[in-house]
Image (cartoon, rainbow over all chains, first blue to last red; front, side, top):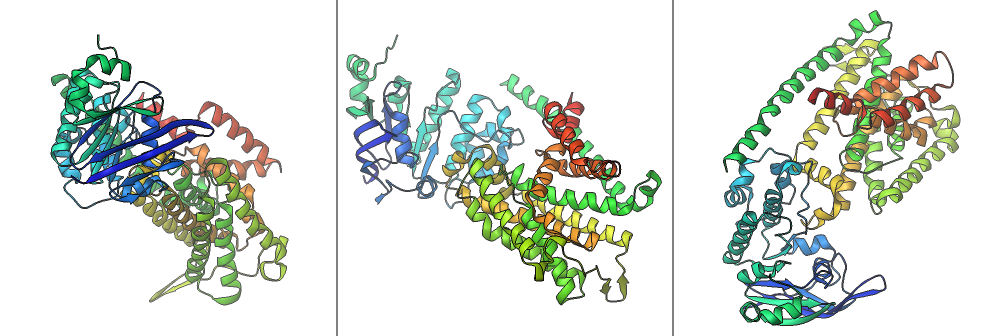
Length: 235
Length: 330
């Protein structure tokens, strides 16, 4: 299995504050990797560094064999990285269909009609304004929009946030499907149990450092360790 | 699932009504504009006034592509208006007797200037973007003022007049009424182009830029390139309006390049409603009429415009069209 994405000892700063202290991780072809950690552990900063929004000051990020550490975000997206940002971030004044017309047309399996087949709900709501959609529908639209780029690597930031449990299950099923399609996925989640059900491997961040690196099963079976590492109570 | 289905129906039902209303309103607008020379004199107006409304409406709609639909606040679009006007005037004064060629050249000069200078402004966002657009705009103003021998300096450019258009088989004289129809045709073509763009994927990208630029970069889109495209298109439309303005009075002056005109165009957009496609037309109607009427009473007509502007921003923040929209919905 070739490596799709690798972060090598990255250090990221916001101004003077040092957020990531040498984070290293990798995602291989066809893998679903969970990135876990409590609030403020550096998960979002890691995403931002991968996407080029807050480039790492030291260390390097390699995507599809190219050093993308200092690339502009649009270039990273064009190279085949789909990013579904936290909180959906769809275009509220455009209709569902118009939202899907915004990404540039790319060759591959994912076109507007195939995306509608994957999310029949979006097909039904084609002419509704993005802002009128429910949270679950917005999440689907956000994923659909990222899929239109025909990414080989998909990053999802907190897809379950603020969604009803039934919808969360549906979104998670879709993410599982992405993996079956051969897309490498990096899943950032607060909902650790959900993420570990799907993931092959997991990384846990704490205070900007990787404190766990192993298989999802290993972490899932060791509840005590999970609690100390990720600070999650599973009551 | 059943509750979701009813929700969809509930959404779809009121959609049909505005579509019907819109078509109806559009036909009324078209009929009203086509018959202006008939009914306007009856109301005490004159046809040139209607030409002026359409010229300013066209300019403001062009600016509004950038302002209302792409989210770029330009304080320098007078530059492209003025370049269109000077281009057309200088062509007619020195090089050609063809009105249409002069309009085409004027539009090209203004539009190309926007195409070349836009990329400089889009390197920055927000207030810095606006400041760069002012600076670029004022540059052309001072060139027009200083280059006396070519532009006529502060006195403005005279010595040209619109020439009859010779078509195979017939000639259009371009007197007041026929000139109005030339303006109307340009207005129709300009607004059709803008409408088509806004309903294409390119237009959706513009609106998406207005809403959130960062989200677009995740989709592999270079936002600055698209803002520059919007800037260029709006520059061409504004230049076309400027070139018609030169023909309207057979005169143009550095005032047509000055930031105050840029400000007036912005006021027109905001008065009419900058989130609405036809908003600038309504804004231009209010602005030109108030200007025409008040300036016959007092020189300080800007005071009244200012007052109207402040009141409209306080009470109708979405502009006249936004206000009517909301009323018709409720």
